Amino acid sequence: MKQYLTVFKNKDTKLKAKELDKSRFFTENNVNGYFSKEGFAKFLTPLTEQQARHLDMALTNTQIGCYLNNNIVSKHESKEGEEIFWLRFAQARRQMGPIALPFHTDMQRFFVDYQSGKIEPNFSLEDLMIESGFYTPDQDQSGS
Image (cartoon, rainbow, N blue to C red; front, side):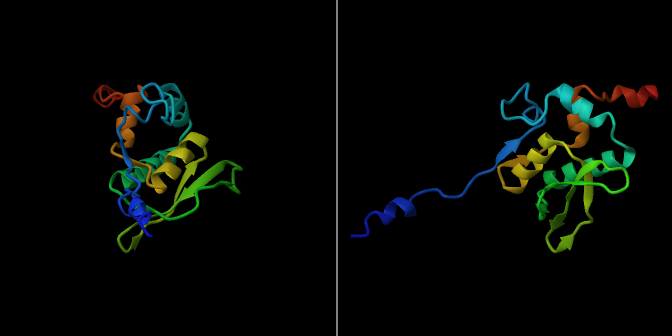
């Protein structure tokens, strides 16, 4: 009578995250990517040093598997009127400070996909900067 339950018992119900490397982050290499290389460079260009540091921290937190525990929605910053979104990460019992990033729909989609377990990023901000052509390690040596 309950033979139909074996269908559910044998079914793999756990959603497995897909590892996301630096090349698959970009739409040139992945139809489900988040930015074109040019679009990512345009996103980075106006960032302040603090915003770049926050983006670096956020990507590092995703790389090490920290839990993202807030709704990722855009809000307008009261000072400049800039649209931003906040991220709050936690690792084990440690709550990390909030991270503010300039709002971009593709960046928001990236963090929502991470939060829902669809992706497991394994890259840093520097990796993405190099892959997009925004930065080359030679720039550090030449002093520019």
